[in-house]
Image (cartoon, rainbow, N blue to C red; front, top):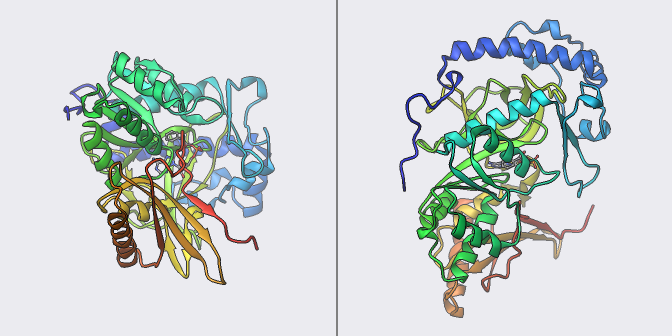
Length: 436
Ligand code: DLL
């Protein structure tokens, strides 16, 4: 793999500023953001008043803990535009969740917000090793989802040659990579695997393609998956995180030279980790739920938003900003199987170690009697056809999950191509249990 580390002069001053400088900037901006939300969004005025706090009560960063949380339901209740702090005419863009599981949530951006978004995504793409003039194959979905257009904004700001291919039409993805010779690809890790399959089925060697770095996010993925993808494509694989409510992609980013977790762009997004049961903040280094407060957003300020993502905060390394560890899962993706907490990423981690199994899987929950059952549906790799070998691989995975995750599951090894493919975020959990 090529060395893509930054060169002297590549970074913005804030990326290497002292912690004191970062904290001073954060305090100024946080005061502004709380006041902006309180003065312009009736929801925040009501929620601060109900909690007996006022923006003037914030004199240190730690005072933020006095302020109430914001949750997804608050956004739903204020559908479509009641969370906005600026008149509708000031919006230059709206994005929304797909709304497949209820009322969609809507987010909006002023021109100033789009400029900041472009800047943090440009910073993220640069942290991955891309430079002005490089070509980027952007396979995140374009549309209401923030992935495609958010990455595009940053690619424009950095001055990349962007191929806005969006998700889907996998054969065309491979053809364009082959013909255009992009240096980077932005895509969900699960869809990257579909692209990999397509390379192989066309008899092309993915290691010989032009890609030097893949920028993967929008869903959880493991370090085991990183190794698999890096080996398959002979390219770097780095993690990008974000959520629409806070901005979109580019809230935090892993640096290609260290690959040790994601630096949060703390000059714009203030992170906290809380105990998800009590809501109390926990110290850096401790696991919990990630909470964000926007520091500069104009159209859609967001105060103490509970992401449901589980991680911990770590000190900066390649940049001054603190890191978050790879997200292991969302509290609402957590399966509680006969009393044990299980995340799909833990299953992924185990199956990557079993010979003969492909990294395509789904977890099917059912309740045949009164007890929940978990079936891992996974695919055999091409050529792994003998029934005996498959039975052996299934038993191996079952044992590893029992030993390392602590639950008894069933495993079904299917033919290659049998597990449904995603073109964006993978659907990992199929819950067939009767609804209460
Ligand atoms: O997924 C934004 C994004 C697009 C991030 C492209 C990275 C790349 P939402 O659709 O609002 O926004 O979904 C946000 O996706 O709360 C996490 O649960 C999950 N997620 C996003 N990035 C990661 C990641 C975009 N790198 C939700 N690792 C978040 C794990 C991630 N989970």
